[in-house]
Amino acid sequence: MTAALTIHGLKLGFYGVQVLRGVDFAVPQGSFTGLIGPNGAGKSTLFNAVSGLYRPQAGSVRLGTTETAGMPPEKLVAAGLVRSFQLARGFPKLSVFQHLMLYGADQPGEGLLAGLIGTGGAKRREAELSERAFGIARRLKLDHVLDNPVTALSGGQKKLVEIGRALMAEPKLLLLDEPMAGVNPSLTEQIAAHLVALNRDGLTICLIEHDMGLIKKLCAPVIVMAEGKTLTQGTFDEVAADTRVQEAYLGRRH
Image (cartoon, rainbow, N blue to C red; front, side, top):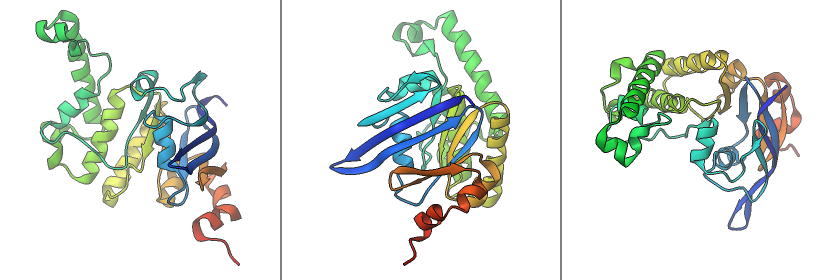
């Protein structure tokens, strides 16, 4: 199967402490892959390294067939790799619609001359992005809060805005870091349903999540990390039955 993302021998440390100690795995094209592991396994650090926030000290990251290790975030986004964060962040004075528009790709109006003059190309692209923002808001059931500031939203709605912003960048691969954390159960189910629909439409997703019920329901394959390395991968039932996974989560029996 073709891999959307391939990671090999990835290493990263801080102040002499190795956080990633040779991570190896691939995210199949079109899959809804789950990335799990106990706290401190290095999952979020891995996302930071893959998405360009940290520069790996060794190893390879390939998006499709293109080597991307050390590439800056803006180039990775342009190449189709987009990620979310554990904590949904935003600009307090901007509306939901404005947040979505900020993440639209290829905005000629960002240039000084086009921004001042308002060229025809810039106006056409802004209209296209506006239509895309409205469509994403409708899809994520955010259209009724489009004019609201993000500070007025619930935690679950903020997570949906985070996903919407990512979709505005037209991703090929979406890395989601605990998008359901701290969200009430009804919105958790809603977010999960949106992600399943996006995956069925062809978007490759790699999800970090601590709720094993959600991982079992949503993800195949499931990749397990522990102590900065890949421990195993397979179906949820296969990794749940692995004694190494049980020891990583519960501790080794003596």
